Image 1 (cartoon, one colour):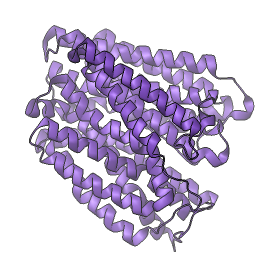
Image 2: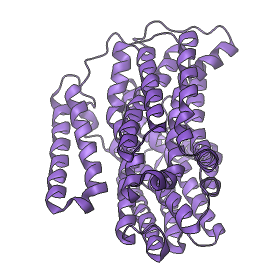
Image 3: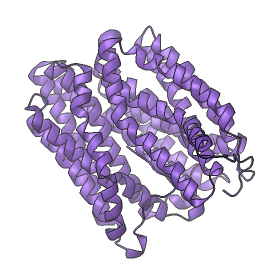
Image 4: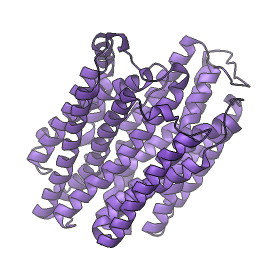
Length: 477
């Protein structure tokens, strides 16, 4: 990779494997944690209180800081050293996880979850960048990318099951206790198997853009989660602050010498369509995870583990269909599979909303299968469209922007779908009102998926020369 220094030179296959494990273990545990916590939300709510909004914040305190710091974290690694920043991210994540494990109150847990998000954001860009510097040849980079994709995708299946097992056996706090030894192993392996790399041409860190990004995402999440309880005055003021900080962010990116997001990204229609599809996809997926976790455990009265097992068809179908989707993208380009994917996700959510969380299990499993198939059809093609929309030297940053859209979709989806559920149910924890709230929350996600499909179909030009798929930077729901 041009501009990198201190490249690792593996001496054999075994060394290469350990290098990839050292680079991606932090990412893996971070994504496992994020997925596992969703299954523990009812137990956390029972122990620490906070109602539906408390469950929303338990997920979104992590997502807001993760999303806000993500792009800056990549710049920090390029400037100060990727291994150096990866280690700081690991250290922050482990310490924050221990704070989560011993949190005496909901407020303490939320503060620790926000710190976890910062640590995870510092880790995410560095592992793939280190691997790319370590394996510069085409074949080596393909193997490194495949390993990254497997680490990211497998967390979707393993995370909920692990969360269910720990919650039902030793308690939800052990989800966070488990992060400590794994994180320490990753930290130790970084000394043995990773060498430092950086980009001598890296620009200055955009502190202005970073501050405005935090303000925009933070105030937006407060409005969406707490707006119904704050009163009209405060909600209006926070909404105005969100719009002002968002506009200031765009303005700063167009004016600064070293912005987080290059100005030309803002007028790129294909990139905008890819980001919209990614946002819609994760909006529905993670909002449904939250609503379904509460719906199954509080409406059906099943355990966290049983909830995780019931949800397994979604990630399993997703993983199974990825090879077939790659073939389809080569033949048709990204537009048809992305449109089909968002429609399938919307159909799955509408089916769930129609029958409700207390329906026959096979009907709900059918909804999860449809949603999982939709994920497979949309995820890879969306990243491929984003990468094909920018010059090759901007591919890494484009991947970072797609990951940012993914995280914003997660944050907003959890906030909006959870709030709709709470409004319709009147904050009830059981009974017909709660069931109606679950159905309304999932229905909201389905509507967003169909709107995303309309955008993809209507605003993507079909060009045979752009039948691309992600080859170096990937993103998984």
